[in-house]
Length: 394
Ligand code: SF4
Image (tube, rainbow, N blue to C red; front, side, top):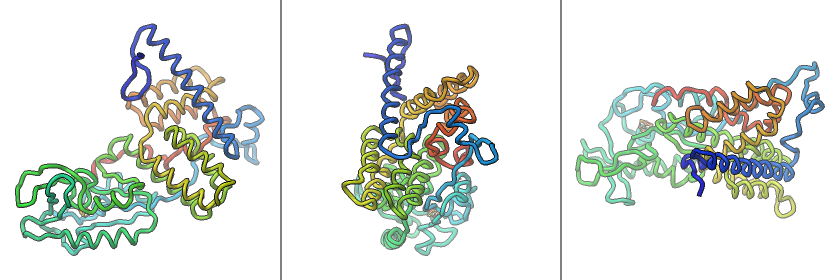
């Protein structure tokens, strides 16, 4: 049984036998990935990874003969995101303190923000006595109570959240405040009913609990998890991919738009798992059996479901190696070394995905840069967000 790195799913270990095993597995993996990409290219139109070469390179020149810049950034659709108002720097917290806007503030110019403060919306003021979640046993209903006054605010909050969530337009995600008895996605303290002061568990706040139940396919995160590069990368990719689908296909579905979206995203889709790839390619090419509108709706649901799981490091490595395999034959030794360094850094968790992607662009060189094709893989999210420092916990 070969040694396997449990984090990446790639072969590990040392010694000649392990090395041989590693090479053989990598070769098999690469061949499999390249053939899948090619199969997807054949399933959709236009082809997404055209062979590079002088003719193709000339074809990408502009009228004045200038080359397309390798780091041309595509326009991005604006995701609709519900955001806790205190994360945007508003002084709406129980203690009246304003948090620094942090990453939520950086996200703001790129999204259609829908700010919400459930506690202000049910008529509580600032400052106010703290609230807490009480839950009788695991899985029991949560109550929102104010221990210092003995008030039970559960019903008021439930009425507000039902109205608010029902009236929302189509949203791509939620960015909510951690540890809040209303907004926390997973880490609000839960107390047993009856005034005990020791929390027994942690779970979602009473507003976020309804969000998770009613929007199972939306990206829902808090600011603490977004401080981790891979969680942030995943959250942003979900937001901008589903927003792009809505803008590019959902508004006016047609077979051409669906196939075009699939082609532009083919490398991203490569990272989502075999079953999702097969289903999505099938829907994009399924012209005979259903209307374009029905196919687009089914595609969107499948896409959102597939995006729920973060792609593994191994999945990204596979795509990058396959792309580099195609593009790197004529690259210089220095560019290859940089690419391998960036790949190793990403694999070890030291570098974000944007590092090996940028190194692969350099490997491809200016003329062949479009061969990294699927522009959504080159720039899945606006670069200033991909590279943004999360800016603390606000
Ligand atoms: S955590 Fe939610 S309820 Fe609390 S202040 Fe922030 S937005 Fe309002």
